[in-house]
Picture 1 (cartoon, helix red, strand yellow):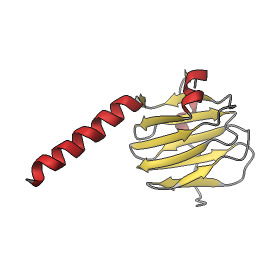
Picture 2 (cartoon, one colour):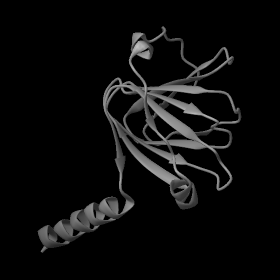
Picture 3 (tube, rainbow, N blue to C red):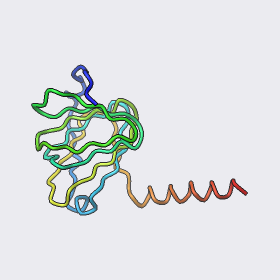
Length: 137
C-alpha cells in the first residue's frame, strides 16, 4: 500500500471546516463524495476506518514517513492521533467509520466535497434495485 508521491500544492488552499458533529459520531459512519483533487485534513483520527467504495485516494499521516494509496474496496484503520492529509486522485466515495468516543475533526482544504445523507443512499439503492427488477421482466 505504500507509494511514493510528491507534495501537493493544494495544501495551500483556504481551509473550510466540515466538523464531524456528535450526532455524526453516534451514527458511526460518514459517507463522503470527494471530487478529483479534493484535499482533506482529518484531525484526531485515531481508530477511524477509511474505506474507499469507488475511486482512489492518497493520504499521509503527520510524522509518518510513508504515503498510502487506497483504491476501490480498500480500507485502513488509522492507528495514530496525528493529522491525516488525504487527497482524492479521482472522484471518490469514501466512508469514514468513526468510533463512538471520537473527537474527529475534518477540514476541507481544497476541491469539492459532499457529505452524502444515508437516507438518500438507501433511496438510491432501492431505486436501482427496483429498476433492475423491472428490466428483468
